[in-house]
Amino acid sequence: MGLGVVAPFAYLCPVRLTLTAIVATLMGLTAAPAVAADPIDYVALGDSFTAAPMVPGTSLAGGCIRSTGNYPHRYAAKHPRVRLTDVSCSAATTSDVYSSQHTAWGDLPPQLDAVNAGTDLVTISLGGNDEGLFGTLTDRCANITGTQTTGHPCQDAMANPDGTDWLATTIPRTQERIKNVVLAVKAKAPHARIVLIGYPRLVPTKGRCDALPLADGDYAYAFGLNLALNKAVQAAARETNVKYINLWRASRRHDICAKVPWVNGKDTVLSAAYKYHPFANEQAAVARMLHRRLR
Figure 1 (cartoon, rainbow, N blue to C red):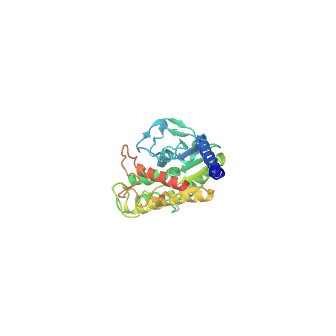
Figure 2 (figure 1 turned 90 degrees about the vertical axis):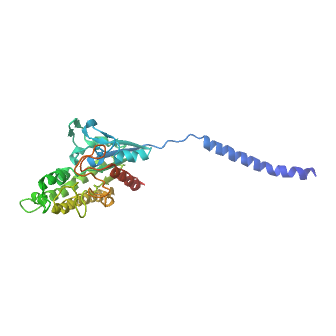
């Protein structure tokens, strides 16, 4: 009888010991110190379509008229591990990647100086200011147009003596310069993820509006150049084997004349956007696209 009573308790002892061991193991796992993930060093290179002048959070410091509401800052805010260095600057060209940019506040170091062997992520959005492309398409073409609403006076003014178009001939050169920027970044940061970001649509596929004062025939002309620049950026990404964000496709129905524009028209709106530059909604869209592209 004694053995019959003792046996069940003897059988339960291993179970109790096993539970005790499990609890101890779990307590050990819980008590183990958490290992902090390494930071992600992110450098943003770009012009005013990255700097986002007059978007809320704009600072005049350094002369770049850069907003903390731009897409690099929005992306970093959603990713705690990201350590952002934003050297984007209004009026920057691809040349300012390698040499000092002159601003009203003085000279800035080359944007490439911010990139090093420890950089993990680089975004690049440049080319629109090279050889005056965007400035010509907006301010200069508007001045050429004046009160004329028919014909294509801006396109006529851009014709070279040999019949070629001056602005169109700049695009292949810009593509090569963008490609060289990517290669320079790769040389300095061989392990970094690199993303080339295109430009949004400025011009509608049809129709016109007062916010974009071009003659009827120049709308198609400006549309074609806006598209050609994006194709050049995309080609540079393909040739250098880096990621590309197709902002042209994403901004369909969000041109300057749209009901919900991503880009401001001819009049600067303080605390919203500089003329012919992106609104906060466009910058938020780019940040979301960057997040999806890097997942």
